[in-house]
Image: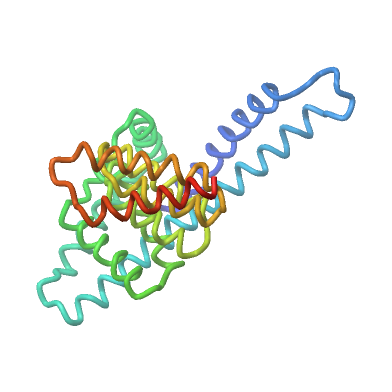
Length: 250
């Protein structure tokens, strides 16, 4: 993407953020409260939204680079990895940002539910390789890099259970428990009926010392397990034990 296109997009984003900030400020504004100033509220909200946007852009960019570097490291010992094919597919994908109009069109389609993976034409093979890189980062306990990598992956394909679970795990290890909870909730929507998102959310709530919410999650996990045709007896016993502990603390 050229510098001119990037600048135009940044300008458009600033305009849209201004509109959103104005709407939000009007929604929470209390005209009868002399301590509230509508313009000040609007400016504060716009500044916070802008900071969030900058942070997200940085994490997506860094996460992509962390994935690529991790795959390059894996390729040193795994000769089956085709780095050239990955590079070509990625270059073709990002070449689609060839104008402000095309970028706006893709953003609109994303809002309608189309994934960036599909819009950019990233192959499943390329995304699988990037996931291997992110997973390797986590397994090697490079948690900040893994968190950014999984953030990137869950951005380009929000419907992948494994991406959200990876993001949740990395965030949990970093102590970002609210982010981990959000990621596990998204994983649950991607794969309804799965036991593990509930268990992982229970872990987060236990770390937050919120045993009532932890109990709710554990009971949800137990319900899913009992409905499963393949009941893991050891997991069943562990869940029942944890539920008893949570009840005693709730």
